[in-house]
Image (cartoon, rainbow over all chains, first blue to last red; front, top):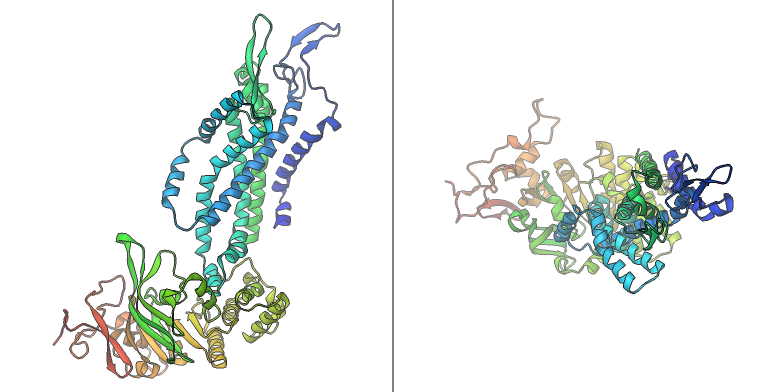
Length: 306
Length: 326
């Protein structure tokens, strides 16, 4: 099946974009001539003619942020955190949801389904915000380290996504178990673990891939929303911007993930829109790439059916 | 020890819960003797398949046996745990399903599917599993079993798939085969092959068969004993000769009357609904239930199977209730 999916051009384009982004994120210092900061712009007489932020026209290709950091390097640096964290969260959501669906489907559990359905109408960003704010309070009083914070934040984001998926998987598994060939297998004396392993999981596998991609998109959108709410994965610190006469506090992301770049500068949307638009565009292109991969998987499944 | 392999007594099966309970099978009693074929015949929705699934305790999640008993080889099936049932399914009782297309996993090679029962009930190495599967494929009439073993269901015709199902069902040499309309989706020439395969197995292994069908032609050729069902109840039962020579219940008469005859004049083929219930009833008692169709009104007054001659039973309304006729 994997080979069939890899033969789909849409899947391949999306896959290559994301893989290239991750690889570049790790290895760009070795392949590019890196100049990460340009705080001032000088003319030919070495006289300062401009101060950061610079637009993409002044400082190609993407311009700089308020601190003069090149957005190209910022998004490349943040890509590994953003994409890998997204993929890990999506994977864990699918894994835990599948685990609970397989081992906790004795009854139809309509009560659980009703609760899940009700929570679907609450924006996930609000839910995540509610759970993460106490975490920041705790981190401020008893610092827990960036990695610990990332793990706990990821677990919160995983937890938020699991209940609706459990509901989806349970429904899917119920419909597979009602199929005639499953009854036929049971009529031969097959045990449940065998039926799940040999019949249910293979049937579910194509849907798992699709759901994984959908979860990755949802997580990316959620991260972007959290960035606007100044909730950054890996925590934040407050720095003072401006000169000694006009100091303004600004919250910056410690990990440098894309949502952090958006969150720390969204007040500049009107004066320096590129600072927001560049990471937003990378979010959009990543989501577009995942959508292409979904399309490729769906095409492969369709051609398999016919 | 009795000669009866399977005995069902006063079995009641319901679906749903609370106010939405639907009685699919009411007060059914039947038996299958060792080495014999019993046919359960009736229209779609009469409860035949539900009865057969209850023998394997494979009713859908919302269905349950409310009361009664199912005894197989002098063991009470309804009291058995899931673990005990797993030992019986496929090994002592197996089932051939009517829809061969839906009953085979489309994503799994048919050879692997044939070995599923063997894996549980006979401990044997993988290579031996394959050779047993190949011999089973040969038994059900495939001339190139090694090629068929590696095929997916979509690569086989309807008749071939049905034969695969038979190979699966007989893989562990069960004592009882439940054949749930095994020929419904097949053309007549293939029907014959499939039914002959089941009959051959029955003779070869001295097994019993519970044949679920709506075709009296099949019953006439393969069954020893007949149970006629309508609306979840058995309305007539007897040995195959008695039922064909002296059908008493109007529904049985209707089913037999539907069989086209080469000798009769060319007129419109009758359907079971062309046969009305006789007002006179039988010996002063009305036939139960009152109407053929499950959608139409059915009298729920108490009724029972009355032995009208030795071994021949017909369902009539109870005397003490309404409907006593002159």
